[in-house]
Image 1 (cartoon, rainbow, N blue to C red):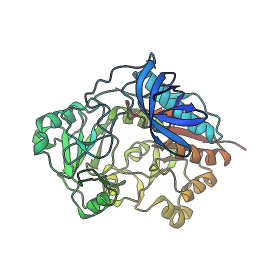
Image 2: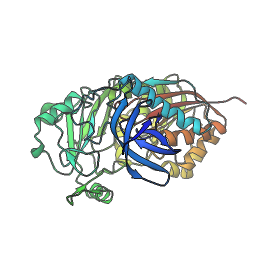
Image 3: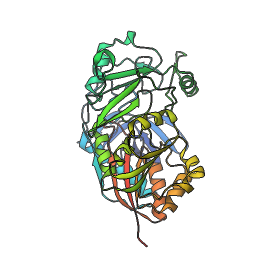
Image 4: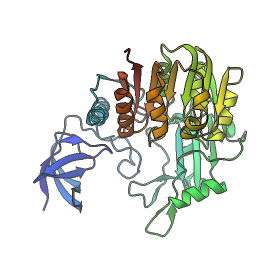
Length: 412
C-alpha cells in the first residue's frame, strides 16, 4: 500500500527527506513541500528508501525534464526542478553543512552560468554513460548539459563505433588547439596499466557479468602526449592540461571563480596547495612576486611548469602532508594561500599548518560541503573569520556542490 507523506528538505545527495513515525525516508526526484504517495523499496535500521508512486500536490517549482535520458542516465538528478530553485536548494545544503559545523553562515552568493550546454568534460564507459542503477550503459547521442562541441562528437560518432573501455572527452568553444578532425574536442582512452588497475579495482558488476569501470580519482597517467594535450583560453590566458587528467568541466563558471579567488590578492609570496596544472597559480603570478605550487600528481605538475613558464615560482611534486613535513619550515612567509583539495578535504597536517601559519588571506575551494565545513571550522577556531561563502554552481541540474570560502586573519 502506498504511504502519503510530505517531502521536507533536500538532503546531501539530492534526495528529499520525509518522515513516518519519526523515521527518515529518502525519496529521489521529490521536491520540498510536495505531498506524495510513496512506496518503500528498501528498509534500513535508521532510514528507509522509497520511490514516488504519485504526486498528490506538486511543487510550483516542478518542471518537465528536457532530457530524454533523465532518470535513466546516472548524471543529472535535479532537472525536474526549475533552475532558480535548484540553486536555492544547493545553497541550503551548503548552509546546512556549515551550520552543523558550528559556523555562523553569511549570506551565500552564487557564481553561476548556463544551466544547459555547459559541460565540457565527460568520461564514457564502453561508449556511453553509466546508468543510474550502475548496472548498464546508456548509449547517449545527445546530452542536454554537454557543450556543442561534445554533442557534435556524440552525434557524429555512432555508439557502435566508439572505443570500448574508459574514454575521456573534453570539448569547448574556448579550446585553443584543434583536436580530432580539426574540431575543438580532444579524446583519449585510459588504457595504461595503472588506469586499468584502478578502474578494475573499483568496478561495479552488472547483471550480465560485465564490469562498469570507474575512473581513477586522480590522474595517474604516463608521459604527456601531444595527442592528449588540451590548451584552453581562460580569462585572457592559455592553460594547458592533459585530457586524461582532471580539469573543471564548466569553463564559464571556472573563469568567474578565478576572478573571485584572485580578487584583491597581491604581495610577495603566494601558496597554491593542491595546485593541479597551475590554473590558479598562473593568475596569482600576476600580482605576487613568487608563487609556491604543491601538487602530488607530478604528471599534472608537468603542465603546471609549462603554464608557469617565465613566472617566478617553485613547484613541489609531493602531497600536502609531505610538503608540511619536509619543506614548510623553510618556506617563505606567505601573504595569501589558495587551497583546492580533493573531496576528502585538506589533509590533517595541511589544515593544522594553515591554522598556525598566520597567513593573512586564505581562499579555500571544495567539491564537498561536509569536508569544507569541517576544515573551515578549524580555521575559524584558530583565529580566522569567514569573510564570504560562495556556491560555485559548476554542475546545474545535479546535486553536486562546490564552494569557495574566503578567510581573513583576525587581528589580535
